[in-house]
Image (cartoon, rainbow, N blue to C red):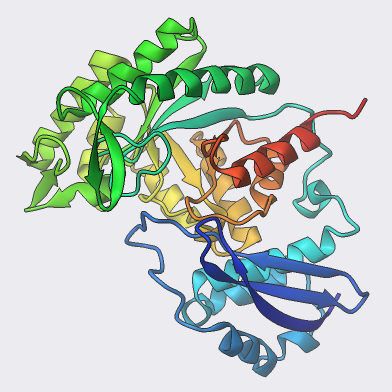
Length: 392
């Protein structure tokens, strides 16, 4: 196939901010559009902003005669990967996604991703329940950690969604009784003491009260890179104490053992490799998850597996840079017996590619944003239902 034309337009993301959407038209008339989501917590390996505007991106592809060449998804993605420093990773992913979506007009996403048709098995959901840190919007709480999630042990989506509604109602009823303070311009709920344990205990009480304690595991996304300062780690929103790396390792070991945390994402800065390895290899039963640690890069995931830095890896497609690279990141994790977890970004679009990727590659876990306030998460979950449920 050939790309007959390439254009762009500006659309809104989930923060009602304009972002670039590229539009690809193939020589057989199929049209596809792609826009990249963005994160609020950015790793050291991720672009802070795209180095090129959309006009120069289109001009670069024309200059390189990409629009005149016969290509497949893999060859187009290889070109984008080679030029990602010039184009920008988000632009590269949006272009890759646009080509993928053009092909998906007439072809199964499973075939395009090189997988058989779905086995009708949905993934387990990592449900975002409480939000802390400096970007807390949904069920916001005073905490140093970005997300407190419940991970379903089963994959009965009907039951999980019903549970989610009950959990959200109980959470809101409980939070509405608390004092509110302002963090980074956002009103958040403050518990009796400024201690991250209060958030954990509150969520566990909600699950116990609803009879769901045995059906969901506790997951925390600490966004550890945001906690570094003064040569160590500072929990600036709660106890304001400065901890050395070793002291922060002990802090996590204490919380894991006390509360049975099953998944712990980004507990440390993405370059503190010795601390990652120490926590991963401790006998705690907790699965340490690398997100910013890897930034969805297959080579970093492979290195992390070799060094036993974590037991799981989060894959966010726009961090990978192309459709092909996102598939490779998941395959690399699973080849090294690491658990792959696919994830949306906090500033999203209505794209359902994450759902297709998760289902086609039979990824066991997917992170889902708060369903009652983030409709883009509902859109992605609906697509998962379509891909894994036979129509009556």
